[in-house]
Image (cartoon, rainbow, N blue to C red; front, side, top):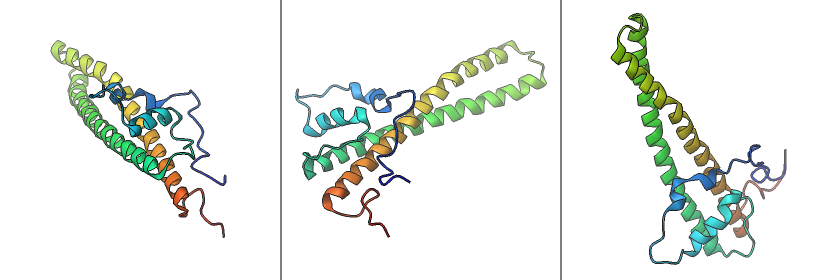
Length: 164
């Protein structure tokens, strides 16, 4: 087992960059200049917060953690909403599919509805799992930030816990 399990996490083998795919990243900042926390987030997020610069002060790490926590809450809410829509489309698909099979696909309007639902299901799988993977990656980033903050405070954490 590696000495530091949090930092031992390797990047995705296909190079997927979940932090960089959020629809919230393209939001405009009113008032011109971005806050220090937002600038730090944009700098460290592409690397998944794998390395936190030592020159950051405690206030920067704390504001960065708050920024990430807020974004994570937003992404989780989006994930919940998309899961609900995905579940409803799946339920409706199978509620229509069963009678269609029993009737031998005799009803053209129901067959068209079934095709429409199937056409919605396929993209919803990718949309939902995009949110799921992004939330997992952001959660790992938040754990890395927490570990960096604990390490700065000298408190035992996953990477610097005393060994028996």
